Length: 475
Image (tube, rainbow, N blue to C red; front, side):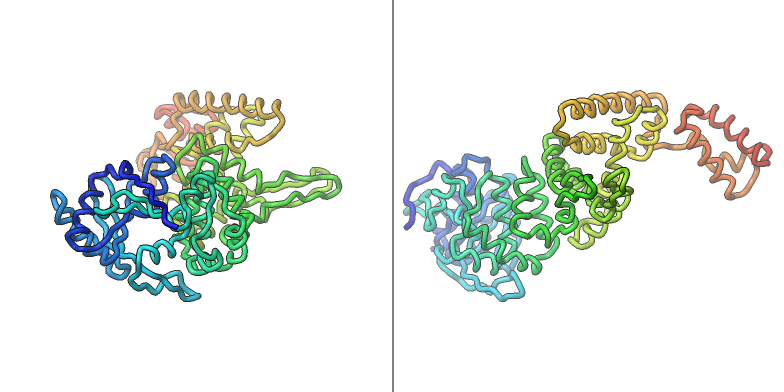
């Protein structure tokens, strides 16, 4: 039964009366629907996009709205989808005609035909997203709520308008969206809807990697991503999407030796890192930082469990994951690879005596990503032992202080050698050769070990002495 509460106060954006006028001129009905309505009723800031549904042509309505707006903004028309979009006052407004949808088993692209507002609300993913405000003169601002979505908002429940098995099977992306909304809003997924996700989990295989990653990114950007990832795990979706992550679950015991559950540890690390970064790729680094532990897990009679070389193995696994999910194979992937492959370096420093040489090498290898690496490694401290926790964090403070001191003195971040290969060739009058590479590498190592400062004159003297031992003479 429709809710007839009026929410004119929600429609303060200048676009709404213009859409109402354009609808009247075309002789059609229009409604604002979905996320804008949901977020208003929740008291959240609405997103910078608004969805308008027309009982008629959404494209015609968009074109008429543009005519009525100052500067007549350009309308982007997507004929294949029957939608149109324009931008007004930093807001994207999307227009679509009300429609019925039917699906084929091997595709989430529906067969579409014109429909009523009720048809359009039926096809929505969740009841909380089927809410609509009228933009029509006779009932402007009235809430149309056929599925008690407002009550679901009050009760913090996510459920589908129709049979969840049909809803999820028709468009399996809705399973990820439901979990994402639960994580973003702090809602519970109704039991029948949650069980239906488990039943339909294999349908996710028809969804493109790009769309899956879009939802994973949104889950990662919530305040507590573990909520979403635990739901993905519980429903079986995570094993399909990221089996490298679920492979970390479990605690093995052999001859009295156990190890921590690296799956739940990983989720703790992701939650830990969130207050300190809004960078989705650093959050991905936290999610994948231990994926090399499953393939490198070994048991030794004396020393117990080890994961030797897991950072190096994990770094190589990152590329395979990015390729499989059609994620960017550019500097973003390389950043995640770098963070994963270096993820234990500062932790080792925090456990041992912090030498200048070790810090120089850390800064040299991490370069401009040194701070991000430190943030990741501090998030990696999940011990429940208060003394150990305090000790690690105190040692990280020492590492950070050393990084500042070494950087100010030795300038090894984004290292440039004080003597170039061209200068070495000129000094010894030799052509490009293996000896030049040997000398440049020797200078770099001498600087990193603290044998010479990162300055031209000491480096020149070092090169001359080293070259002399190699049988080279100044020209």
